[in-house]
Length: 186
Image 1 (cartoon, rainbow, N blue to C red):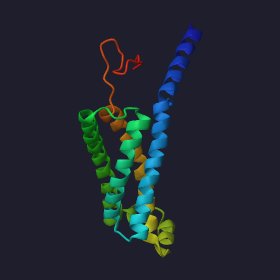
Image 2: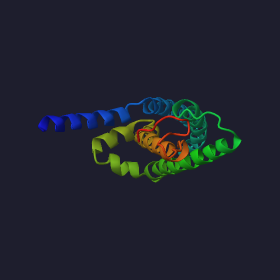
Image 3: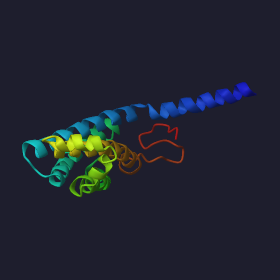
Image 4: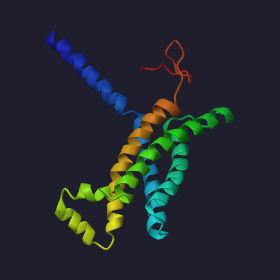
């Protein structure tokens, strides 16, 4: 009896691994990294090369990254492609709404932690670290990136959840088949 329980447990572990390590998740991770790189490059250009302030930098980089993300997610990750003007419009609107939600989280984090200076309190937990950062000539840029990188990770995770459950949804018929005719395991 114990052996059959172990077999069931191993099958459950394997199916969870299979669910987490499939083509869609792997391509989404790659697309997320690429989108993040596009976002960070845009931020670097707007903040460091053009001298824009943090909130404007975040907004403009967001527009660039969302346009890139829609294309890569639609065509490569979720394999939807062009589904006609009506469906494309709906997908673009849903995608934009979802990304506005995560933008609010990102911009809110930048506003509270950078603009309002709450990063000082967080970094102040380790006074020597805060002193070292504040003594650097580019302390404001360092603080910006200390806040930005964890926010990017959170945004990637939330964007996948919204894309999977809200934007690029495949409808299933009563037999459990997706609209493209494939049998669904979920």
